[in-house]
Image (cartoon, rainbow, N blue to C red; front, top):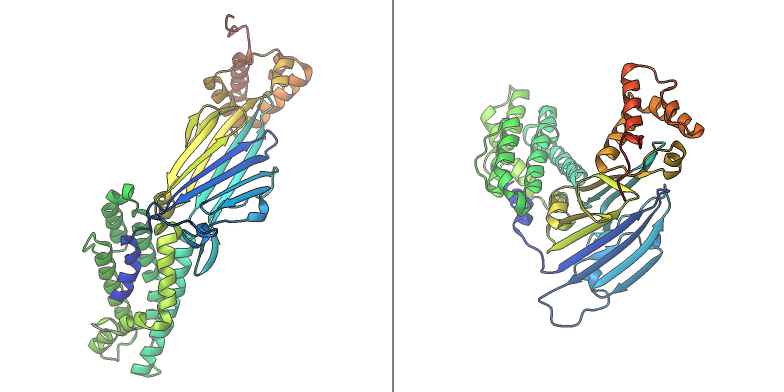
Length: 423
């Protein structure tokens, strides 16, 4: 069992091969919800003196374009790739990058969503993009499930072989695939998410929290030592289930067989037949980015209109997001931005002011998207725009809150209340 723990933690101590990669992505969202996208990847090995072969990107650091056919144009060189493409509103936006290794090719986890909402006086755009290591939380969970299912099956076989066909194994098998699975998943997730250097300081607290939740002592902050101790504790719990289910058998003999030194659970995990399953857990724990050298990402997103909210940094007309391979190896990176673009035609018909500042835009957007206000306010504004009279906004507004919101919108839009700036 300790060898399995050592293998799982080995990757947390390794570093990449020395390549340095810069990934730059520019996305421009159009008013109809379509988007134009440009990807540029440049990679180098600073320690390399000889020329790069034509396929170095895919055979060296293992970079590939995840879906080459989805792009309008693709240009490749030994150390770079450049792709451009237009994706219509509602069209699936492909993952950007993939990874090639001895197991084959696997694309990064990716999801791009653009939502456009008509608020009568303005259009609201919501942009959300998820970028993730292809080996993330789902892969870690399923690989642990596969490994422990095989361990449970082998434990049943060994118990029957040693103690006869009447030995009860169901509770022990449930302990392996149930509670042990929960503990192992939580511990490995905590280790993975606190592996980046910027988050290493959080590791002790995360491990303390996980161990307290599962009633286990934290014997060490060293990943390998902690995992070895946890595995021994879990083996002891499995042995206790075997003893509880078989009161007629000798408890000491059962315990020694299951979880003692060189017990059957340790030997099962040493079996060559299970090593592919152990390797799969390690691969999911490390991820495609876990062993890679320095990789920096810069995403720029240009949305129509004025940016109201974002997790990134506003830079002129664009929102900029920066992260690196440590962020991706820990968990998915989510990029979010929200903007609004004024409906100039509607405002002109109303005779309303159009020099709305950020505060006014935020307030208008809030009022026109609140679940209890949105429908009546939008209906009132639609009537007012059609008639070209802002005063019609109040017609049909029922309820104190709705009427107060309508009055606030009218005040925000009234050029006599807020005079136009002097030329």
